[in-house]
Length: 334
Ligand SMILES: NC(=O)c1ccc[n+]([C@@H]2O[C@H](COP(=O)([O-])OP(=O)(O)OC[C@H]3O[C@@H](n4cnc5c(N)ncnc54)[C@H](O)[C@@H]3O)[C@@H](O)[C@H]2O)c1
Ligand SMILES: [Zn+2]
Ligand SMILES: [Zn+2]
Image 1 (cartoon, helix red, strand yellow):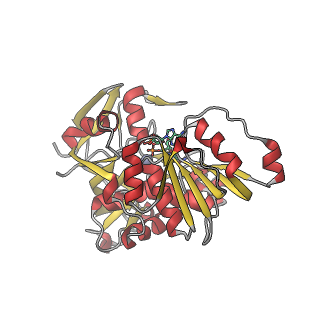
Image 2 (cartoon, rainbow, N blue to C red):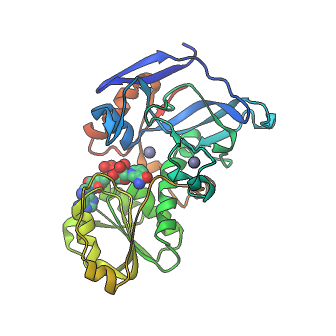
């Protein structure tokens, strides 16, 4: 096979198929994909065939947390980029709409995002993408670390939306891969304290080993925080944290899945609380790569499994079969 790819055909049905090798058009690069992280959304498509209104209606390649080496350049792209290790920002916005022109291109209604139907993802040997969305990885990073610029971007965006700054007291609810990353990014942004809560003892142990203030979510802690970064998707986590918000505190909702949540408007008004969701990220990749390269965001404890492409399905199952699993990585050239 020239371009073996892990294709989702139906719920629980992944097939390794040879897809045509894509070639770059003007302004694009072809990338040999060396590492792709498995994200909760990949697992969700594999198990349910849809996320809300986004439904997999035709066979689709999964995977959107990718890094690799530039193997071909299209017209207008500097040939010096051949051989460069790059992290791939997975969402290509239209660049013309009001959202794109306002800089919040993560909200572009016409974004084409890897492994979001109907766009194929990166569980493949080769992909093509826009050259300016393939970011140079600093020296010293391997492909797996560079691929983590995607979830680290979620963390950078959460810290920016929460205005985390030196002195901030931060609470992160949920110590999954995203919470563990958001907490480390908050610390790198200067937070004075970073508490992270979960109900899974393995994950709390990883958080503690990373030097974070790991707390059992059932502990009933009530000390004040300036920023809440909700990364569990649990309504209970959000509701329990709201009374802990300091005046002018920022509530950043990263986790998905909870439905309507009641928030005390009296508290919201008397303390002038801010509440925002986050949808992916914009203009975060250079910062994310720097945080990884400097070691400010440690990833090794999160990378709990590495799988060749032929075992992509095992990688997708790891999340639910092993309570210690955090982030599985697929290595298409292994
Ligand atoms: N907004 C975005 O752009 C964006 C991007 C990526 C992921 N996400 C979302 O972020 C969330 C986290 O992703 P993940 O991969 O780390 O998921 P995950 O499921 O691995 O982690 C969630 C963690 O929350 C814990 N938890 C459950 N109830 C809790 C409670 N009451 N208090 C504290 N912790 C609790 C779970 O034990 C688990 O460890 C998911 O909902 C995901 O969909 C959002
Ligand atoms: Zn992801
Ligand atoms: Zn747009």
